[in-house]
Length: 327
Image (cartoon, rainbow, N blue to C red; front, side, top):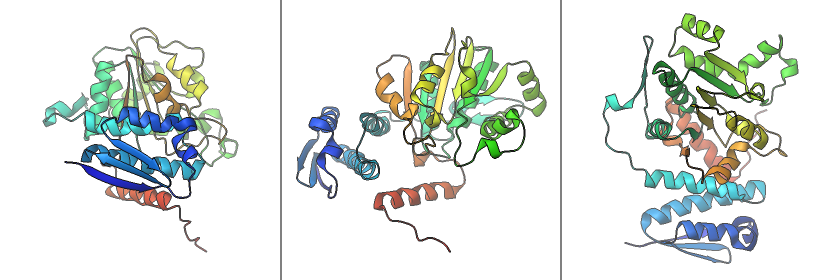
């Protein structure tokens, strides 16, 4: 069975969409050699198996959206889109029962993987020392990563857990927040404490923190350290620069693992600073022992409205319409 789809690209120069000398188009053709891709004028014609055509339609739609918003499409943007699509069709989930989903059991809670995306994070963390978990808000990336780390510590596979976040301001100013430095930074680290408190009692968490078995620190505080026998989680990694990402990943010492979580749609860095998370797939994809897991709105496990909110914002961005101001 063959499917044909015509995609309109009016209003965007082909160079912006396909890259210099059609470099991005060539990469797509190499990845999807079984699909006939014809670019002519303001149209892209796709012809081939229905699953591949549907996936390519989504990839080109996202590229058009990126080109419209930012003026062009980066090589790393395309890598992320391709990896996201391929991870969905090349990693079918085997049947599982409830017991297989258990990540960690503590006296306070039993934490299970609830979605296919979360199961992929667990599976990849067993096989690789560094796992990137990339996806939108509400998909349980941080919670799953913390549970995996606690499970590793309980099983004595690591001696400590280090959780870090970039202290990047999302519209707020640290200078205007009350309190000393520790109090100013606390709001950035609070989600990590919240996840841990679901798995450990407040007394146990306080004791382990005092003993430095569990460290929750701003990313900048990791510079110059070597983390051996440790499980490192870098949360909100979309707000780490390339230099910060390199610094964090090179902290890994003997018998250590890391999970990097982030949402590439919620970058709070200044426009002139590239996100280390968006560039990581292109830079690190060929290194054995590093894995990338891509989650999407089907993995959302928060309030049922969260998925609808994500859908609504995606539609708004695709159409590029300005919202009516409320006066």
